[in-house]
Length: 472
Ligand code: 5AD
Ligand code: SF4
Image (cartoon, rainbow, N blue to C red; front, side, top):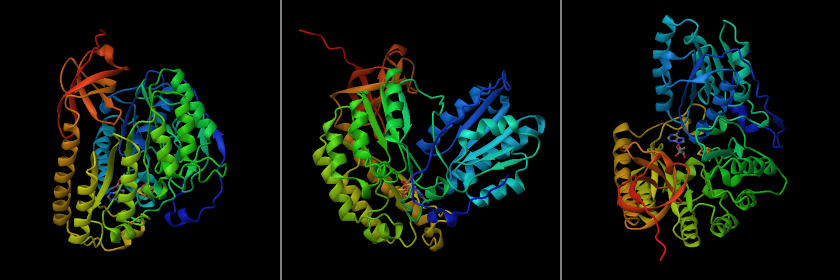
């Protein structure tokens, strides 16, 4: 069946709560002894979707391999947010095509955000016939069925309209200590540069009782941290019409007493005083907020459809800083949006100087087909975009380092999540404020929240040693 997405239709959909249905979690022995290779591109949402994909694959008999050349099935969970993610996928598909010549039984699947764009689905259909299964973001839960029923010819199963909210999803989680928890799917903000509302559909919130059940189960299984996940978590509940909003949800999650709660991503427009109050009230809600700025120029923000001005962003930022002592705030910034002048860019630098973010993800604007901004001429040269990005990064890194230096000599709580890449006998983990710390330690520290004395700070990480308190 072929059902190509119609981007123009996405905005017109009816505003009513969607149905909640149970995921099927098909089990089969058909692929026992076979292995899968899964490559994930993009954001945390995709990383978490991949945990569902892994759950599906293990349910039908596959085991994971890290080596794609060894695999019986290859799945690419793709991202459409910028052109470079797109290029990486097609680059890798070239290698897979070559491999399939010597392994004709290899099953190749491409799923996630990219096939939601009609041009990509068409391209896969016409130019990549060796791709066996193409699926979208709305039917990940059906992947097991698609694989089990796959015959010889290419299956393209992509739905333009988002469907139900699935419950009872079986995840094969990457960590035993930290877990992603979807609280909503899709996004209704339609920022003019962004493909997400088209690839992920309208906002659909999960019911609060279902989220709380998942969090409590995770807590009972020994998880120490949950990250509540959504494209715009602050708008949680707006589509439910049951009176629950993100502040209510956050408070109820805090009351489960799971040790650490995080949430991403916040949109400044929906950030209420009540949310700030709840975050500051509960010790298990981590003092870390990712608050995308995108641009410091009110003129560009308007063109981006962000619904706030430079001044409003600064006001919110200062309010959060004042209400939550020690809070760390990171951001996303795009440079080179169409018509961004030197003055506009200077406004962005001005906000960075005023906010002195703990960190920032910075991007060069990339026109996405089907978005309103793509209709505006992309009139900033790559040279200028790169120049602005470099200038911005230098400033951002200066403040990151400055913030990190404040940690030197301090003792902080770190949830140790794994072995560090920085050498043998080193583990790593995150502070409450989401700073990465490399620690002299051992495997036994993994999965614990330990006290660490910070000895050295760099722009992107801290080094520290374990502290053992001696009682007098
Ligand atoms: N070009 C560049 N960056 C983008 N982002 C989203 N869409 C685009 C685009 N078309 C960035 C935003 C967003 C982050 C996830 O990706 O900064 O917050
Ligand atoms: Fe994209 Fe804006 Fe939605 Fe974020 S809030 S996902 S940038 S449309």
